[in-house]
Length: 212
Image (cartoon, rainbow, N blue to C red; front, side):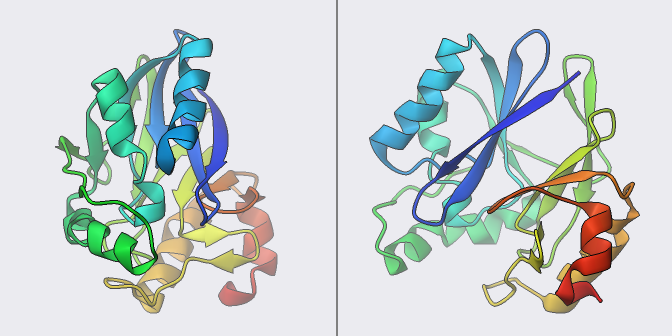
């Protein structure tokens, strides 16, 4: 059985998730730690809990979700994976960071690609990969049926949706992703978003103003 914990990092208040199994093997999802202090916070948690990082897996490649990748690779020597359609987003990362006043000069390079409909295995546990573009061209969501939760990145928020005015974004594509992928999950599924509090699929189906 997998459990999930989160930290909120950087000026964008991005949620970074740690998914771990009973053997303490773990994935880090969307590491957004900016600067040495935030990196130390996450690394110290991992070491204090005696977790064994296996990989970094990203829902997408916007800067607030990738600030901490290199620190984790340097510390734990683990691979970084993302959907192949996020490559253009990653290549713009340093420039995007500079526009927002962040010191971030090294665009992350994926070690492997995450593919929709190709499950991710952590020990004996399986996470389903849902292709949920629209906020960015290669956004994916990580669905764990046994735990009744999905890590959705910046696709769906509590009472809101991801922005679509960044390069590669599309409102029509995003709404279709939510309706066909996330809203096809059981209504009680917890949505763990890239920003803000968690929500539930059923609640957003009924109350999200962008989807009525």
